[in-house]
Image (cartoon, rainbow, N blue to C red; front, side, top):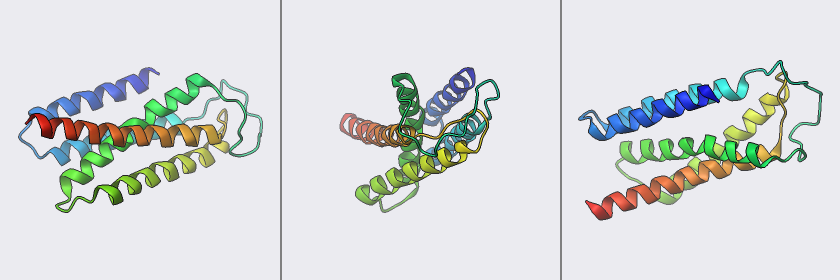
Amino acid sequence: YQFMGFVGSIIILLAGIRKLSSTKKNFWDFVSLLIYMAGMFYLVLMPRHFFNHSHQEMLQLTQFSTFDFSTNVIGFMPLGYLLMSLITESSGKFRPTITFFGILLFGVLLSFLIEICQYFIPGRSSSLFDVAANGSGNLFGILLFLLDKTFIEKNI
């Protein structure tokens, strides 16, 4: 959790620099996305030797935890936000519907891949609830970006 807080703090710091800097916004979005992805892969693919790892079925539907679900939602929100920001700032032709569904699909597929990998990592378990939570977080990140973009455009 300390590492997740550190990565979150770095992303917030870079978001502030992005708004104040004369450097292109997509450069800071790219740097933030790289830091986020490195931190996320470290957190989700790191073995947990202090937990028992029994070979349960892959992508199970048991063991729902509200805390775990909400952590996964919050953990994937930056992915949707940063990808939307990066794509909309770097492409001249912005197609909201295609971008929206493309990023949503990417987030769900990435989450699915992570859950399959976690099945083979000691101390980790694989759950469809996590795929749903990560997909929801990705969706909320996309919506947050669109809300932020709409609010900024109305107030400028």
